[in-house]
Structures are given as structure tokens and as C-alpha cells.
Amino acid sequence: MANLYSKLQKEIARGGGIAKSNQFRVVFPQLSGSFFDNLAVKPERETLEVFCNNVSLPSVQAATGQVNGYYTGSSYKYPTMKMYNDLSLSFVCDANMTALKFFHSWFDNIFQDKNQFDQDERIPDEMSHYPQRKRNRFTRLAYPDSYQTTVLIDKLEPGPRYRDQGRSMRYFLTNAYPYSIDAVPLDAGTQTLLVCSVNMFYERFEVQFEDARKNLRSDSNNIKSSRPPTSLSGALDSVKDAFSGLTDSFGGLF
Image (cartoon, rainbow, N blue to C red; front, top):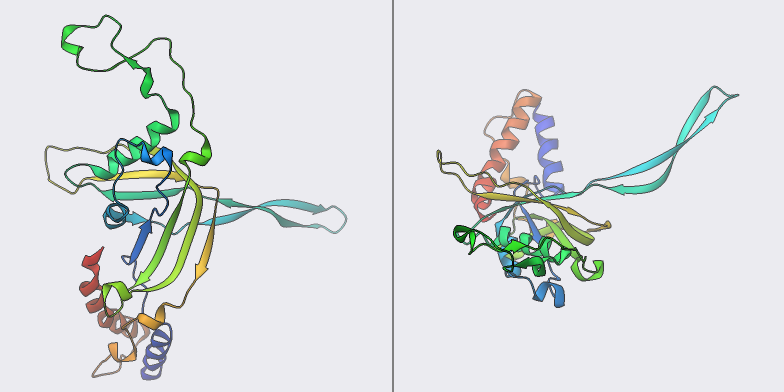
């Protein structure tokens, strides 16, 4: 087992350490143009970046066709096209509910229905300060080029300083826009962080591979033990303990 532990040390050091799930960044770099400039709420790019607390790296699968070999007793499948799954994001809400307001503004402006509210109809006095929808209304959708944008997802690892974080992968999601905003539960009981979740469509994604090891602080010296472990599970536990300090030190940044 000492030899196994040594191999674990070597391979982990070769890869720059253990990847951590709480080291990532989501960026909306192109929130500009007449569509986004006219939103009721348009936060700073850093606001969305800091408050995004959950995202999954995008997945992809292949649609397939099948050819049956009637005379050979076998069949085979062949790929026909790429299929991309939706993107789900969660944001911690500040006291001003900035993230939730932004995505509601984005979503509403896709349908351009703000001009459908009017005060012309007779309504009860107690409801007079609420906007009312016209009965004869229509929806005019915005042009896709105006409301679609690019979303970047970076997989990071901690470096000596925050700005020196190593980036191993960057995802470019093109022509993305929100198609649903999940309900935000409120509860008079236990006080917890308020989180809003948004689901987005996108056309496709591209992945940029980078070497995160140049800025990483982990090396083989992060894994030390006075006694070599006597089993595989013991070796893995030692590795986990060695890297828990790094997780605790940098986990609070995101």
C-alpha cells in the first residue's frame, strides 16, 4: 500500500491537485445593445458573477440512426447530429433581488408586452394603483439577435492569489436566453438564503482547453503522512484529508 500511496501522490501532483466543485465562474460578457440597454434592471457583470452559486458544466449527446443487417443478424447505430441540453443557473439574491429582477426584465422584454397595460378600463378603487391588461392585446416578439447573448463558464482552481486562479476549461455557450424562471419559495419559518433559478436555451457550445497547473499551488508536498496507509481506502482518505485544507481556505470565495 505504501507503493500505491506514492503513486497517488505522483499522479495527483502531475495533474495539479484535485479539482474542486466550488471553483467556477459564470460570465455574461455581452449584455449590451438596444435590447439590454432598455431593460428595467441591468446589473453589473460582476454582480451576476459573484452571486451565481450553482451551475452544471454543459452536457452533449449524439442523436443516432440505426441500420439493421437483416441478413447478418446484427445492427449498428451511427451519429446524425449533436444535441445540447438546457443550462440551469442559480443565483443568491441580494436584498434588492437584483438577479431575479434582471432575468424577469430580460424575459419580459423578449415578448415586448409592457405596452399592453392600461388604466382605461373601469376597475375597483382598491385596485386602481395596479396596472391592468387591455382585453384586446397582442404579443410582438423581439428579434432573436437582440435578446440572445453569449454565456461563459470557467472551471477554475485556486492559485497563489485570487486573480491568479488557474483555468482548466472555458465553455462558450452561444445564442443563449432564458426560457423559464423557477418559483422562489418564501417561508415564515427557518431563515435561509433566497435563491432564484433560471433555465436557459442556447444554440451550441464550444470548449476551450487550458492548462490550469501553471498557477496552481498544489503539489506533491500537499500530501504527507507519517505512516503509509495499509489499504486503498486508507490511501484515498489520506488524500482527502490533505486537500481538505485547500478546500476550506478557498471555498469561501464562491
